[in-house]
Length: 199
Image (cartoon, rainbow, N blue to C red; front, side):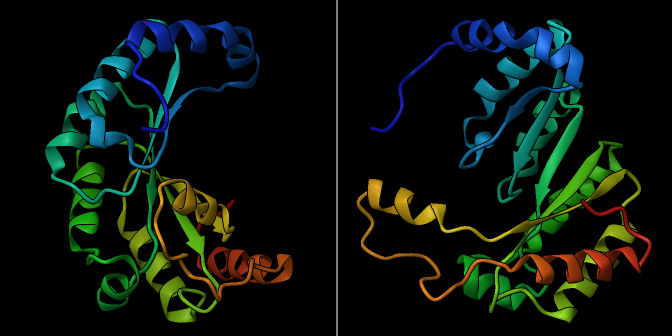
């Protein structure tokens, strides 16, 4: 096992130590992972406590599970940071091991319920750094009513060390290079020209 079991009270004790920083920066509690909603009950209880303490809350998620997990936590979430890795369903299946249909359905349901969303799009050179994928991001973004913006994330190889820690014998995307800053800027401009808010 990596990590340790904790209670909601123990987490909140640590989180609230930084309340002055949250108040001056506008920050708060962000649940990330891995996938935090694999522990949906704990997430809900933690988010409830955070809101009762007056904190801004975010959940970063891949959206690959039944919608009831999102629905359960949504009343206590100020902003969803929603991963969108690949616009093409077949490519998503080939690269991620599952299609993007459920991810898309959950995103649309979350948006339809009025939740604030930021799309987080990792750029993986040689895999999804293609004009058609970024056109797909633009089309998807324009279809959402509660989108705060799009965030482009350059690829980094930090997952390789995590794989080793878990004793997995293969490295993901071994031939991938990190994104050059000028390439990242090009995709940011590509989306801004399509009237999207991009960071």
